[in-house]
Image 1 (cartoon, rainbow, N blue to C red):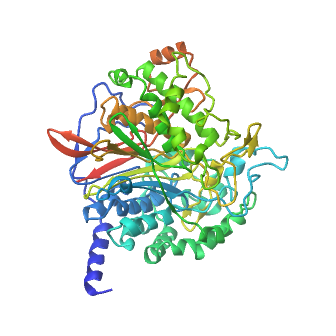
Image 2: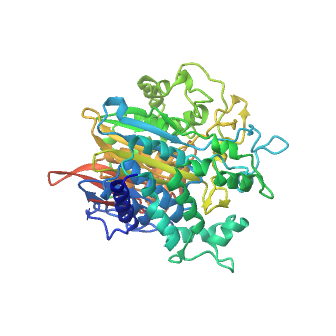
Image 3: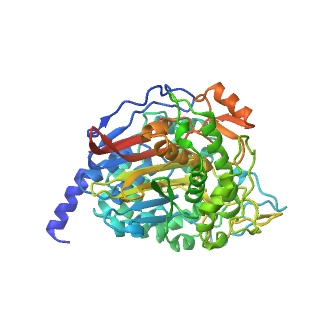
Length: 602
């Protein structure tokens, strides 16, 4: 390495290691009548942010700052995503980290047509020794969910680092090592425990069972660290330094992989099957995105093993037959007919999801691709099943006019996840959803980070009366996900309109679809769309966000035959959209008021 190269790298490292003094951005007034902060989930109103050149939206201000620093010195959207993910591993360990996996959509503005969008798959894989009986009792019954989660049994081979490394080789601008500087500094010097992390630690029941995690997250009396407590993580700092210098290999092929194997296999009550060889064999993949037109836009999402892209495209395809534009909220209050149509479309999409969607490297979709499930004629036929009364529970359709012998999936898919949206100064963009599955994953901590419990996203039941379950456990298979990183483009010009996504387990599909309908049909900006109450159905009750909808809406839906369930719906939506303000084209960013997310840009 020559002296000029060393000097440039040193400058980049110095810039990235510093803290931003604040975003060069402007806030705008929220839509009239938007409801005030309320509810037990810690709702805090946000108005949105604007910027001209670049923007980053993440679930934690420290992570947002890290991404901002990267973009400020000329880094790409992928560069910024790497810096963000490393900081999230440290400051939001309950939701994502290097011990988990991720899906990322990347938009290359300089590329042409279909080549401009790539889907990066960093989903975890099952151990080579796994069988479809992994989560069954000796009697062949599905074990209680948390009997599977807590311990080594649920841990899959982590994928996020290999995915980010693969993306960086293609689209990185700054040196790989420089992108780890913000997280390493925070791990060594300490970071304040956030209010959300402190709140979740108070209610957590299983983390203390792991001695390493207990020593890190709790004081000597067993009390969780309060918000504001400065927490240091030298073990993670060492791991990140090794990865910064050696790429992902030190994680996948060295002592770290052996530490993970030992932790998983030596669990005292619930050992797992994951081996260092499984981790070394892990490969990230580039897949074809799921893109479908909706009115004057093209909406692109993740393909299997995520179900998010297909389910959202199906919902939009059905709603395209309805006059959604006339059903916009008034004074922040949802229209009952809009909720009805949205929930019914969701029922139909979730029914197909449960029967057909899994890792297509193992189980093909009907017709060996996404086209039959997204066929316009098929979706029009599905939409015709929506009447003025709720169908209660939908049945899976037959996109090929033949009955496929498959059982229904039974995985609950819990919601501890994080989302990142980034647009760089060149107009390239990413939408990345990242997860360790349940809150605090498997509750197993090793070398300063938590291990995922992603294998519990498989169906615990391997078959039912209709046949084998598509999402059953199989060796080296990737569990189905609902993560739905999404990019939206103008149909004619191909210009990027929106990058968005959310955590939330299987409810992610409804959260993201809400934002798409609200921005494309109702003309809201992305912050206004995120702020709307969450609603929809996962082919069960019609779920409404507790404390944020009117009694009148509940009664109107009940009159249409809906079984209404009021519940906390703590989405973590992030989004960046292209807007015109006073004639100027700008980026507008939104962050979910239900979490600690923020947006920065220049």
